[in-house]
Image 1 (tube, rainbow, N blue to C red):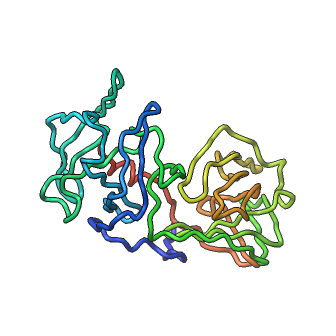
Image 2 (tube, helix red, strand yellow; image 1 turned 90 degrees about the vertical axis):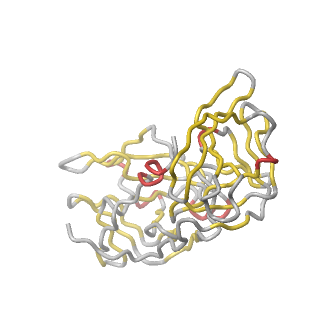
Length: 267
């Protein structure tokens, strides 16, 4: 398949970059505070988004137990720790950064996202991963017509859309439901979350005359306030459909997944 240069801004933050976090960061497990700090640092292990680094002094006393294992990560080495609160134990929940890591994070700890039940920046809960201070997300109303096709079948034909432009991702076109062929759409139980847009309220598979394609479209009924114009609208993965904008067929962007995150994240 022919590859095209992306037509959207790419991430530019280098691996190993460190910055201060100008927000209070808190983490809770089983309703108990594990850390509470206004002195966190960001470190980028990959360009997409950072990790929080929490000063040791701001972590609950006795919550982390050294496992005696050293891990080699992209920006240096770290010692793996178990999180323990009473009878609750979560091995590999955190790691303490060693002296060979970038300046500013030695002696701090980072936590595996799933090991913490609830993350907060100030008083707002954060989902999936820390929000990058270098990522911008805009939801813009557009009067350019959008037609979505697959296997020669028209799935949607809308005179306008709300375009979501997010750093590092292809532009998404959110469409009013009245312009979608719902005879081709089957709801699924899939739910995904985004730190910038919120949690999806619906996913749909698509059936054409020749095949069925799982989880091809989605919607946010209650998005974050930054992208409220997309509430209730439906978007299709333009990596997997033929999307025409004002009559012009757009090249399909390369598939975007979290595989890099899952591969690089310490376990």
